Length: 288
Image (cartoon, rainbow, N blue to C red):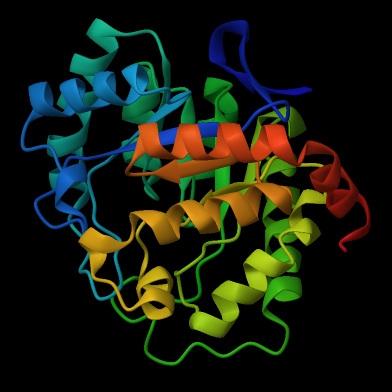
């Protein structure tokens, strides 16, 4: 058992059982409609529903980063996100994550009580590392090749899993240098962010490369394009495939699962983890 340190001397237990992060998108254009919330009250209600279904973390985002999406302005992201976080925090003290790559938005969210910055830019925005460190917050460092609008046009890797690991190791060094404590860092390989099908499968197959760093590993697999490529199903039909991917990721060392379907994922991972815990430990150690 290990713990992810959070602000206010709080912590989140990891490693013993899978931790599920429920998605709340305060956006009009995120790729899965059921994750969207049109206003702060609806966003808070969805967050509370995620908790009732077994989520350990609720992740609020206000900018769609699906392939081909265009960025929103910082002002618009702030307008959508901060009232939703404020309303949720008024009603719950649960672990709250904010999905943003902008330091200014992260600072505002942390001031409203966010515990984790889920940063797809991996501290690429100047001041983000300092914002996290000053707040004593946890941070998710994610790998992305390019920008959401263009990242799927022609991604090329020599050794995808190893290159992702090395990139994230460099971002960890940046975080540590800015004063972020190691027990507050989580790594995310960025499945679907500038990767083709073969790259995503390589990341899942060799996820142990990230687990071996000693930092907790988060994966976002839920209903993504690679699941559709493997199953031939549209977004609405990808739940079963997403659950299969989550189980594979648990076996290879993932700790946190960012999902749209909390209840189904909690149940699937509970059964899977209970039935193959020892084998998972062996795979984490030697990569078999």
